[in-house]
Image 1 (tube, rainbow, N blue to C red):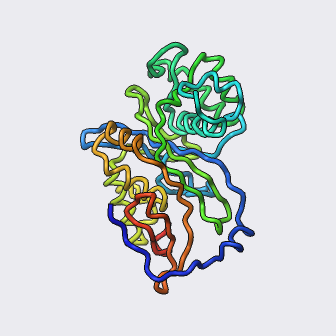
Image 2 (image 1 turned 180 degrees about the vertical axis):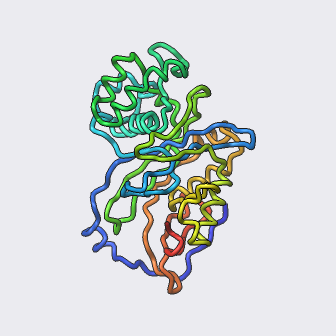
Image 3 (image 1 turned 120 degrees about the vertical axis):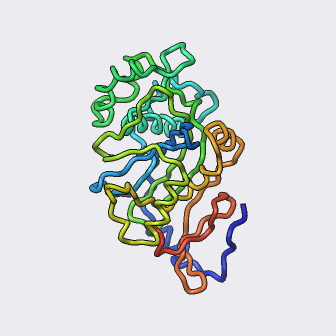
Length: 294
């Protein structure tokens, strides 16, 4: 896909200074749950609680930071597809699956020895575990052991990798994964970190994002129209996802695509401050005016 070339530019914050003031990175995982709806490909998204300090009130994919329990050595034996995967990468995959369960009640796991996901009826019986995991009352390893489950890490397909710019007060090192949602798992927001949720076509999500960028009055949630703000990384990943017509196409395309790490930098281009990303990441833009960044 053709992208707009950068004009005359200069880095607003020098590399040396950026490195000195940069906050430590927080490992995090995001999961893009997919399904084939009547109109076509749909992705599950949630609305962040307004009191959360990152992306509050925005339409985002389920996800969150890595927990210490995600790195427990005992979990590896209960992860399908763990062979050849480093400990660090496996912990991120565990975090993605855990966050999907905590935030929207979808569990990418199989009963030991099975090739099928846990069914909807059994999933309902695990609701108390969802609350305990969310509160940090039990480690993931204990949940898997007591329910005799294996996490379906082999169902995750890497899609993107974004690092928060160095000048931001809180920085995340976030890995995005695609996964087909199990047919009988009812995805619903948790009512804590997220206050609303929707299965939405990428084009519809992008339409809301564009309207919010051009009309500031829409930055306030419209309860009737369900318009939401979408932050820059989410918007670009929704756009890239929308190039696929269905779940099978999205997964196969991602499997065949090399993930390029994106760490945006702010540059002054032709007198305008813009957030810039590498062209190799294959998004529709390589620069965005700072006044359009939510």
